[in-house]
Image (cartoon, rainbow, N blue to C red; front, side, top):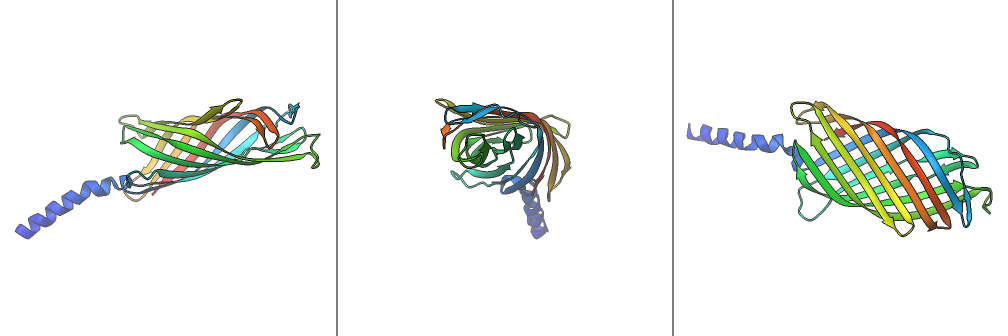
Length: 229
């Protein structure tokens, strides 16, 4: 009887640990389709052009790893496609986000993350004055602040979320923000499957980056999904 009592107590003690396994180690993988409206202008040297972007859908994919190790930040890597046809050809403001963040709150009601995002641009703009047949490449990594929060709606499978990366230095400004709602379609000990919908707004103002000047805005609604292991 004594041994059975010990085994029962051990099983009960392990139950909350299993129920909160995601607080020990969690892997998140997701994707997003963004119905983007593009506007603005860019230039090479002193020449500035309003290219007349054609609106098109864009994709974004990410993976994030969260862990309980003190002082070591969690990691999220996100690929953002921002390719648009303009008056002079294909323009590419795609970039990869390297996000390092800490969780300051993390429960079913509210979570709050803060850290940095190294936004790595490797893009192309098309102009009528470039010496390379209208193509001008640029490459820059922009460190930004990063904030994210989630608020669960009690008694429902819905969660409100918001995320922003932003930096403004002299005449350059980079900002990427989104707000939305999540529906938890599947939630169990093995896997979570969530659906997302919301609105995203991105601004890229570059001042003399590889002789490129830009003031472009991308905005529009998005839908997405996320799997949590």
